[in-house]
Image 1 (cartoon, rainbow, N blue to C red):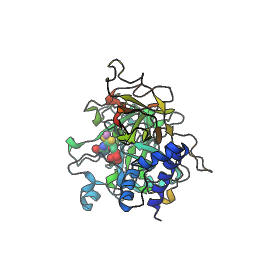
Image 2 (cartoon, protein in one colour):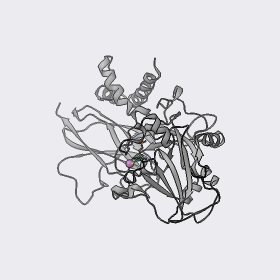
Image 3 (cartoon, rainbow, N blue to C red):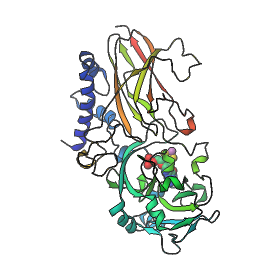
Image 4 (tube, helix red, strand yellow):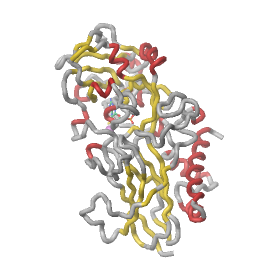
Length: 422
Ligand SMILES: Nc1nc2c(c(=O)[nH]1)N[C@H]1C(S)=C(S)[C@@H](COP(=O)(O)O)O[C@H]1N2
Ligand SMILES: [Mo]
């Protein structure tokens, strides 16, 4: 059996086990679910594989959704040009320099001009002792479903910043991707220097990232090196990274400030339904499965509710706080992690996992995802709205405590469900 197939079967197994534990109704639901009805015919298997690709814990390279700008996309240049502009491992160079407009004092700027820029060899040398790995979901504040769940590896950005010997007048870090040398194509982001130099307990470091799911990043995935900011939305994780500028400027310069985005937003906790039948007959149990992105505020519960479509929900309760919410089952850490990892196993020394047992120290992990399931039974005939929401570790129900769209989408999802007379 191919590894890929065994991972799919693993996920079927996890979900099937969940529904089977629920007894006769769960077993009946298995026949109904587009996700779990596991026919023997080839066509059903292909359809199932497509559904389950979304369900595999780590996202394979090919299934990662990309958000990329550039005319042309930087990595599509011919190899000679890629070498010339430093977008291959052998030619990549990273500058860490002072901002001429708001100078920081650096005793050892890493610059191309001075011949002191950091190259790939130096980065790999650092990686021998400083490499860090963690799980992080890549997610865009403007898109309601995560782009992909990754195991990322890199060297903490601060290790390279210290090589530049900053002395004083450093308040922020600006950083830039390769942009075809066209000012209009610049993609840049920024962080407070404090966030780069220190991690609050339990938080992960900002990385100069060079691997996804155990493989060196290619150009399509932002390589040779991209920034990775664990607690932030995707726009902070600049790809094709070529320059870091230490500045005494007190404010951000993020490209994403255009477009009205909240550039200081932490990742939010947000639940989504992935699979459910749109129509059932009275008496049939309704299997629902979904995914929740776990943001900075953590996750204690995922809940669902169904409410008749008529009368429409009262306008004075836009966040459905008065709905009849019931708890869904949050699925545990997978045995095999998928994503194309050799053997499906996480490497040792992944932050958040016990070094000897390989087990997650807490579950769910922040900045990652969980899968969840629920089985709805005894619904009378009618037309309904099916909803889901998360409850964070502070007890806030989605979309609170930060309901503003441009800080990251976490509106409560609504899907129709029809229950027909038998
Ligand atoms: N250089 C560069 N970096 C970039 C972008 C870009 O267009 N150019 N897009 C950003 C945005 S908006 C997101 S959401 C993430 C998406 O990461 P991914 O394409 O690896 O999934 O990359 C970020 N990094
Ligand atoms: Mo984005």
